[in-house]
Length: 78
Image (cartoon, rainbow, N blue to C red):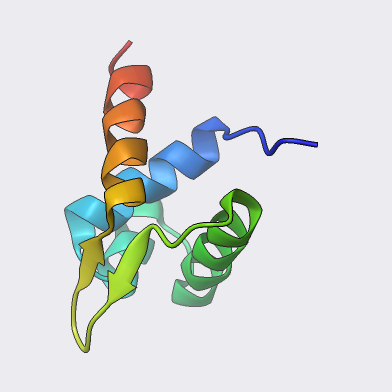
């Protein structure tokens, strides 16, 4: 069974890119940091790829993350 990416997943990716950290993404989404952390882990596990490289203070998009970001921009802009 293939994972179906939904609006919440796309919003999560956009918030992480815009916020550049779990804490800032949580603020943008108006949820707790632990919620963002769990959602990212769940999404990456479901897709079977890392979407972000985690640094000490920032998140970096991986190639797979950049592809999903392009899709998120396209879908959420419509």
